[in-house]
Length: 306
Image 1 (tube, rainbow, N blue to C red):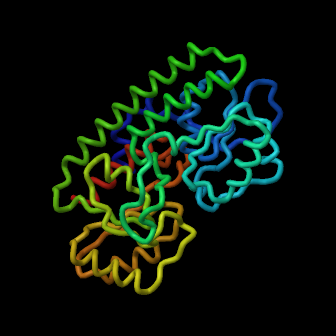
Image 2 (tube, helix red, strand yellow):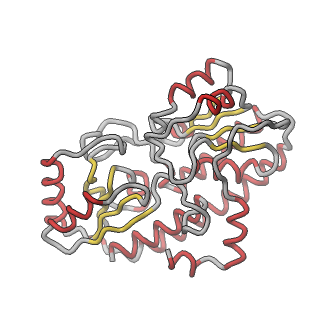
Image 3 (cartoon, rainbow, N blue to C red):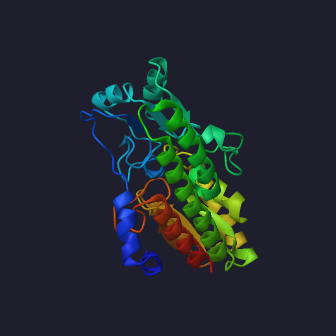
């Protein structure tokens, strides 16, 4: 994370902090409201919407989107939203019924994942299942910005469409610059070290975009709700040894005990590196915004593999 702080000047960090989104309680609002399921998408939506509407983010920082559930009062607020933006593709396992109820109540819903060329899991037991972790590819997030822009203009009343378009164009440029920075960082990783092992299958889109091989995951699934068997762990330890994988990347909000055991049992030196993969971190954590999170993660991945 110290590398991230060196990368960004103080003024830019302050600006990013201003744009960041935290989970909101369903307070009274006289203006239009856009509800967003995950805090990662919430930051993206806030950059698009600006001050044109209130953005209510359901999942707090550090939440696991696979297991998060909301209160009855928050669910009722969702049903009165002008627009609901969700990731979809099965990510928000704990609030699927809330999304379905909002749809039945006539709330316009944008499920971003289904509209940005989803891929299937490429390894592990989840092969054939759509991968919901679209945000690990910043180019797909840039595509999502256009979708969010159009949905906001179409469904949110009394907004300045010109301002929303200006916001979207500016943020899309920032995402293009993010892709360029990540490409430059990953170019330093030798071809024989471009191998990813994670706590669960989360980096399929990043691997596709930047030319990595997803070797395996501690939890051989696309959800943190699954559990590995002893044979799963034994097989992965053997794979790590055979492929000479130098690092296991784990989510900062998840226990890393199993990853540490794998690292100790592998026949090669293996570091366990903590990243922000499923959720934004607190302001100042190195992952307070989506762009800051991806900058921080890409620095850590490049360093961990070289």
